[in-house]
Amino acid sequence: MRKFSKLNIGSAGIPLSTPNKNTLNGIKHVKTLGLDSMELEFVRNINVSKELAPQVKKESEKNDIILSCHGQYYINLNSKEKEKKEASVKRILSAARRAYESGAFSMTFHGAYYMKENPEKVHKVVKDALISITKTLKDEGVEIWVRPETTGKVSQYGSLIELLKLSQEIGMVMPTIDFAHLHARENGKLNNYDEFCKILQTIEKFLGREGLDNMHIHFAGINYSKKGELNHLNLKDSDLNYKDMAAAWQEYKIKGVAICESPNIEKDALLVKKEYNSQKKMFEQDSITPEFDKSQKAKGKYSRYKIGGGKRTKP
Ligand SMILES: [Zn+2]
Image (cartoon, rainbow, N blue to C red; front, top):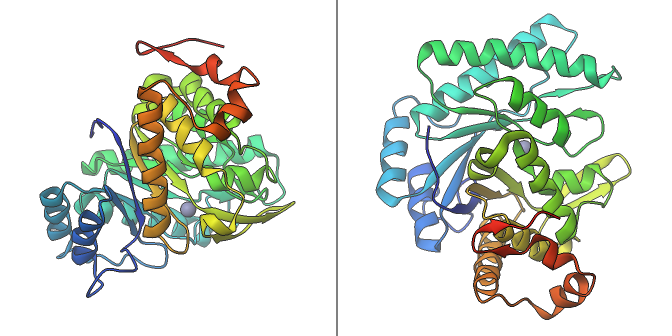
């Protein structure tokens, strides 16, 4: 499986500004924009044909663009209807196969609904299904990370802890960490530097450094209610604190892919990449932004996580 040297920020699907919109042009355009990754959006159907897949892989390698994949929406591994459950398994398998043929390193999806059942029971159902799915893929030589995503609604299976446990339990499974979903799921919490650091710290606790060196992230502006996610927004229209999020990413020196799912796709991807790079400079120069200074350093929080010579000082 692929090893990463940095965090590759990119777009959820073909950038809107791509001339002559198709997957191959999308990859080229991601490069032109100065982004590093693109997610293949198989959310409604698998829109890369078997014939096109090797060309997609080649184009991504040529342009040094990392590809990930979002599997289909219509998945519920906890469905009580046998046909629906079987269809869900089939959708995960077919998206994973085509994503792998297209050169994607990871395939994400929303795993299940609780259906008002005990979360522990649902965890076991999802776990058993994913053990069987990953075995099938392994037997076929399909080398791709199978990644259930942290979900935005409280009715959906996929809390951070559930997915970290699942990742410990199954070799080919790692989580997709959707920061906007976590924020919405917790009804507005998980939105400052300390809280973002906590998320990353928890990942490291369960999965070790590998968890932080092999990340599949989603972010977006988001609108939510008590029940969680309502819809995605552009960052400027939402309260997601992307500056603190980028600072926490720098602090933990995470690697992998971070995909922007705002409606404006590439614009917010570029905004976050710019913020991430400027945070990097600040971390390197050991200085921090004025807002950051006020909100974090004053509380003594910044120094808790400060990196000294590459070693983390534990809080
Ligand atoms: Zn998703």
